[in-house]
Length: 182
View 1 (tube, rainbow, N blue to C red):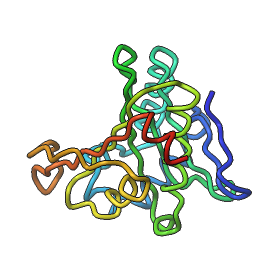
View 2: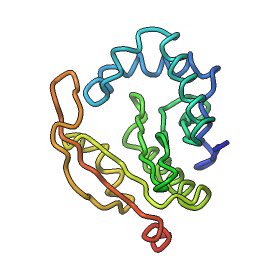
View 3: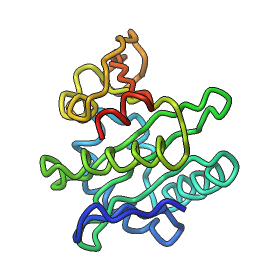
């Protein structure tokens, strides 16, 4: 199981069923900022929906090895970071992430992504990590850029959000480049 202390106040912990209530409350109080970029936000209307998300994440993790971790700041849930379903044949994965209201702009997600990318390459021996962000989501795009990922292209109308289709910027990093940057 992936569990990691980023510093003395911030930890990444594997998502568990007992996290349903704090995760639902974080999502609920952050809806206005999350809704712009995450299509699932409005479907999370009650704790049972969050429980189903966690159950699925645990099941998929057990079957595939992917990781969904809560980001905890001083024992308060701040967000989620995930290694989505792993393509073991090609040894590649994509990372997804979000922070709740009041936790952004503090370097938390950059640190969490750095730790998870390092884990994917050094512990899981994956070869490629990808991060996709809506082209207009400047804050989210800053994370892979800050970590040295390469902008590999733009996929047009890749995701349907409440405001319509958005393009995705695709960032990639390969293990050999990551090792050189360490």
